Image (cartoon, rainbow, N blue to C red):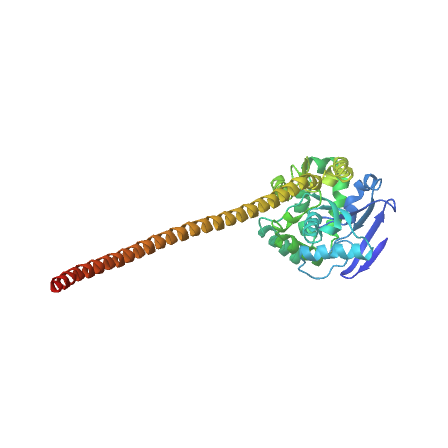
Length: 362
């Protein structure tokens, strides 16, 4: 395809494979270009529309002064997708390309369907080797680091067995623009995605090289452990495992990208829904029962209060009546006594008078 102008710069891009197939985007390692994937292309293009590009600072893409950041490289990937009108892609990135994939998984999850993160890490434990490498390139150019880098990229056995393949990669490294390489080294050195990569929700395969001194298996396992549901495999290779073990690498990638999707947890939630409904119903029933109980209790209290008040009222009334009767009886008795006494006194007073009258008559 050649060069593609995007909102973040101009990038060398190549697209191969069936037009109607799902798109698989490949992102190269630090110090290589899109041709690092040549050995995988026959297998990948059988099932995918493969989009390769040179990362910023590499190959035929924009190589402005840095430093770069992984976020900047992630934005470049999104800009390429936008320019090609791709809403989402599968992702395959090795080393620095795997770091860009991690950024996309965390910050643009809707754009990544599945991701293969090969020979990579979420952070670099020691900044000193990167600073030394940057100084070497600044002073002596790319050739000054090539020998040491190749030693880390391939096992001694592979270097002896496949000198032409090793030389092809060494040429890519030497021809990488020095300022682009230095700027990208800073991006890798300063990156730490250990927390943000936990947000990844797409299916992920982490590939490590058993004999990789640049990003050893320990870092690959750490990365896989923080991405929920991710797969992990090791290949008996050094850092550029796709070059050292091209067939095994392609097989692992194809198996992962084409396997049936894992059963989601959504159905479990649906099953749990009736329980939720039942719980809600039970809660409602309990609430009604509580309400009824409260009403009954209120009624009973009211009744009890009424009865108690009635009894108390009766008691008071009875007491008052008794008291009134007693008082009235006492009063009546007193009056009766007074009347009898008065009558008796009157009678007694009359008798002597009557007798005196009789005597007088005689």
